[in-house]
Image 1 (cartoon, rainbow, N blue to C red):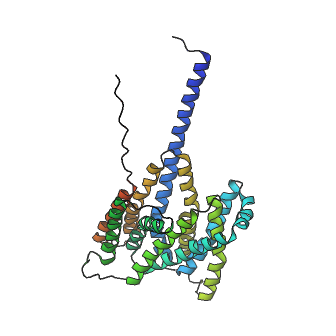
Image 2: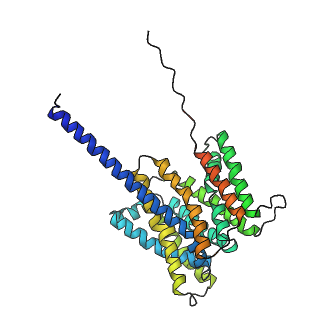
Image 3: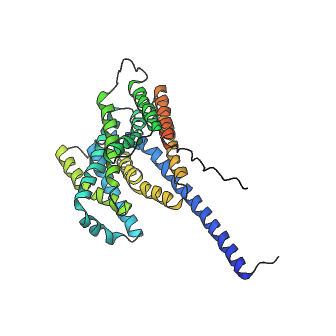
Length: 324
């Protein structure tokens, strides 16, 4: 039977919509994979940069680069006019937010990387998602499920395995201060996202405002520190610029675009679990860092815990009525 013109238009519209959805999903996957691959390189970049710069110097350079890159993104999205009104609407929030992240969070994280092997610092930092669940239960009154307790136990067992290099009973930490700072960074990062739940402003503009708040603080701290800038080589500068672009600036924009385009947020979000394993490989190949076997075991515990945390309960379908 021949279709009417109206039916043909509906069918063509449906095919066009399906094609657009497919294109969006491919773009989301491309943006997501690019972001994950870039994030996988930053642990190596941290170590290369910290070989020549102090954490304060590193953050100062990265903040300058991040501000420039985020301003360019805002200009591309025609959002420059939103920057001052957004800050004026809630200055207290953006000042506190900027002091937490990037200022305190990255200073503490960089110091943890300075004291620990990058493979350990990075793996411990991945437990922040579990920290977020616990803090959300305390501050946002969110319910903790039974599987969250199991996930938390696995995550923090993984942290303990990494921190003690498998010597759990002796609790022998190679760098107790480094481990403490790495765990403190997870508290700050989780706290930043809890604070962010009340923010309705554009995420890119909000991130830019955080860096604009932190930038003068980092410059003042670098002057107070009195660190020497003259000895930094081209590799040191390039590494710091790389951190500013691909840990703090552009990569966040790519990740947002991935989440914006996809209809399957969980599928894109799960890509992040690839990152730590690629990062360990890069650390071993590029800077020849020896990856302790227990670091890999602990990381698997953390990733397993985070995977369990993401599992959703099966929906029970209502009983169907039998036809008489």
